[in-house]
Length: 140
Ligand code: FES
View 1: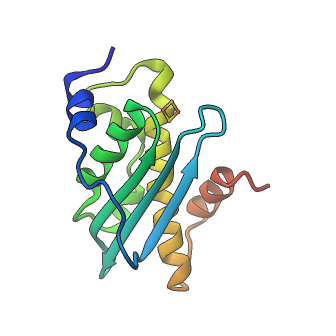
View 2 (view 1 turned 135 degrees about the vertical axis):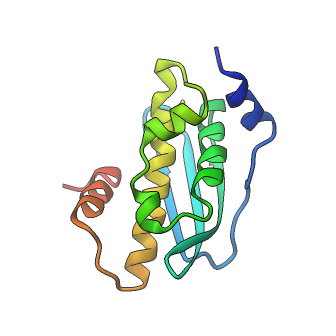
């Protein structure tokens, strides 16, 4: 059912845990399956220097969290915001159809952590990120 890559990240998750005094935190959850993901970032000069996560969820959610941390470390926030679920799916060598939303959860957690970083620093928030934030938080 799962690729070797998914099982590898599930069995040996990378960057799991919490960052003390993070520059941004993304807290997201899926109301249908109940899975929850917290993603912490440390940013310097708009580059993501460190990233960790706490995920309470399924194999695909843990693997997606693990791989997204590897993918974004060292990226600028602008580069990180260009990522979408297809980047995770490619890197994980695919996910079963019913588990694609787990990769979306990881992207949402990343977007929310960057949103939080920009907000805390009183920086301008791009329109697309504001819209995404409202959708994630179910605001109208
Ligand atoms: Fe919902 Fe994996 S089953 S995030």
